[in-house]
Image 1: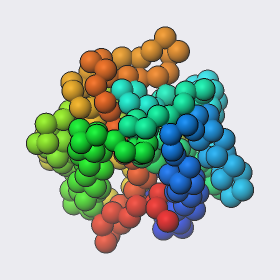
Image 2: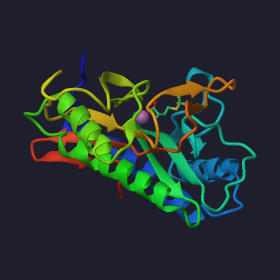
Image 3: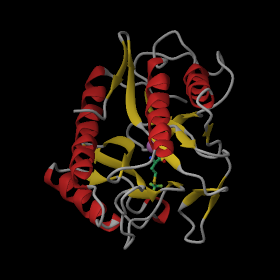
Length: 248
Ligand code: MF3
Ligand code: CO
């Protein structure tokens, strides 16, 4: 069952989303060659604490850190640690925060210093795919219109979308119905209504879409070890169209 949110509840989710956006801004400023992935985790926690928010991910199914930091061929759920970022890397940062009982969830992939053309093209495809999906998050459309728009955007640029992980409804829980795949035919699934709140989160691989999980039981990597990017926003569907809640 999809839980519809009132305008007041969407305002509460905007407060959670704002904190997530603040943490992203702080991390974007800090990313440079030489920084460790655990330094990014500490920065995010600092911002969340200062804003009175709680990290959503810590302890979720035993997840050991505050945020996810996934480097290069890592797709999602990388555990921050002693890994040092180097010039030319790309780093995906996923942050969830709870404010007044509501969740915000957003991910972004950042270049570390100068990255090559191939990485730049992949970054553009991932960001563009997110916005192609968000554009379809409006009343009257159906859920898979989002999925289809993401897939078409990505594949027309010669990249692939991950199948094994999907976006999700979000609210008082980090994961609510419905699942939001990043692939599939258009015009399927529930009709989109004002008050629905979705985390739309394409994961885009330079090579094949297949992924596997490392022996730490969390880190998801591309099977062919090609680069991967992840872009996610928490979005509310309103009469006037999509509203991005994880923005400043
Ligand atoms: N953005 C991810 C998601 O929506 C974050 C989950 S990471 C976890 O599923 F550690 F909390 F599992
Ligand atoms: Co999410």
